[in-house]
Length: 368
Image (cartoon, rainbow, N blue to C red; front, side):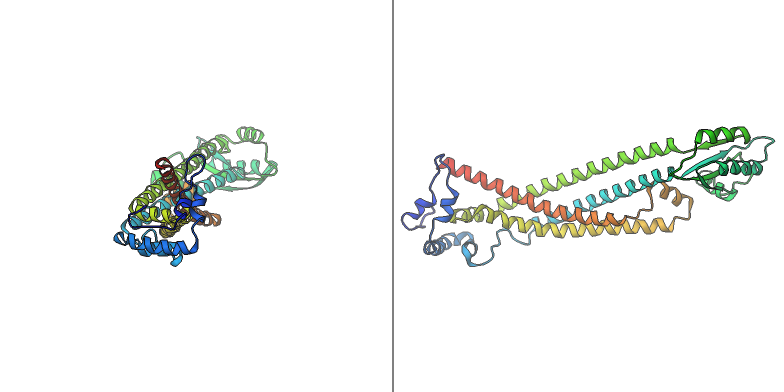
């Protein structure tokens, strides 16, 4: 015991009672002292610890007010919540991107179940307009066809504008003409029979159901989704490691305070709760900053895409990545992710404190 610090006879012995295994009994240490002893011991410990500035803290820990084991404002705390904000921003950015790509993949799969394309290649001595009309008649006569739409020359050149420019004129190149055919998902037509009928009656006609390309794009989208979840897991793991190091640093910087509280009988759960509250408050600052920054970024991207949607580049970007607009459930999951990071930070800090205090118990048991 510290020099100059005394305690009533029998109490110190009760405080250091050991179990049959030799480890100090936490229940004996925390429940044996009477209220009179606690007041006397607190006064003596305050006088002894005054040299290191622990008097006020000990009085508070013994029931005199709310303890403040970890300084609320410090350079380390500011750094930590800034790092948590960055991690939250990256996590929300990853999750939002995953949700948009996933929705785009579902849109691709939905489109392929509702639409196919008839392509007619220009041939010599074949009137293109007559061939288009004949292909439309054959398609509309087949069962399971809801409707058709022939792309005019302006719509066709717009599709080619990103590669060939906007000066393409009829006759410059043998550009195939397209007919989009809307099908009934509940009563799909016989594509093989339709293809044979087109080949017999329309020279240069081909039926394309886009399945090969959509399957490849969907596979790529699914790979992107799983890669996004893997990145999200790495971000959460890095956050946990950062909190563990920060908690260890806070414990090292406040080691004397923790040991005094531990010595006077403070429960491990009480000490861990103070660190948990401190780091949870820091995490709330960080997740608010990171989450709001991510929402602002997605909002700005949606405005940019909306402004460029009438351009060929915007159409191509929207076709592949979607509209950069989070669905309704996307905002909910971003909020859940942000709050989960704050909760994860608090739980990690509590675990780190308990781990440290268990080491203190083991060292005390070995020295006893």
